[in-house]
Image (cartoon, rainbow, N blue to C red; front, side, top):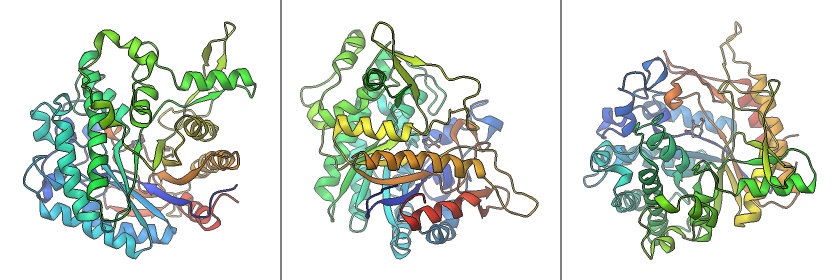
Length: 449
Ligand code: IFM
């Protein structure tokens, strides 16, 4: 294992998944508050109304983080907690919450890494067209300014959007996530374009207003490809496939990343979507391509790929014996080698793993503890691969395990447990799992021993 000396070991969370709804504390509802009321939208009819009640229990949660020896904590800001209607009047109580959290983290020796948007879009703005409205980029810029003006004297690390692929595709195309829309492809592409514009506008605001030297990134979730074998042909096929747009499928990397890092939509994507492209104004690509300091990669799994007999890449299906997490995601540790390597080779930015982890059906044992050997094994295997990427020359700046706590897993409700710390939702008691102690050891050793 060779991780750089200043490597940031952290955990990640998101506002709606842990805090409890902002409507109980002077904030406004987000699309998730609306969506959770929809019959059948969430497993067991659950919602993030209370979640981990972190809005009230944050001091204890910071104390837990201190005990783990974390170097960084990635959390998101709830837009409608800070600005209840999405634009206009500020909810000072909401802003104060994040202000105090930042102070407490710094006091505990933990760097705050702030994500500006992790899916909880203000309901009032949704009624005004949401991401379909091009003004959403301006609304996001105005919100960013409020947050940056308040926190940037202490916060140095910023991420604009978390996993735009998810909130655009799951939220606006398949309807599986909030706001639950099933739009046609031209409108989905419009939503995607506006979200990229919002990213660019937010970076401009951070650069213009930050009171300290800001480090800015973006946290997408592309589909990582790993070569099925170590042959040069399979490696080339995996790399080619990872950076291709095919079958009008928006679950790809380059449609989202090339504009941000290279300043243009990929040629193959422009061909695929030629008949359904949104209006792209002449200076849009320059707005979207702002200088970034790091590439935030959310990597949990991926696909195996090989060179087919015609030389073209082809995916290799997993078999019934492939280990899987509770979400049925394949356990494929090499994705934390190939993903960072391929991203680094294409975009040339230091890589921060902004999310990685696994859902398990954790339970409290008779001894009152939570034993989660599968999670330890999962993290151990993935981190070894990440260390291999570092040893092979990939510049790595940090790793954020998802997640500090078991929390509200969106449409899956509470049955998927991702935490290093178990949440007893009935009492809000936290029980650090065995993996928490293990991860604390990894941090102390600056890598897996
Ligand atoms: O819980 C989510 C998170 O909000 C975004 N990335 C994936 C995690 C696990 O599904």
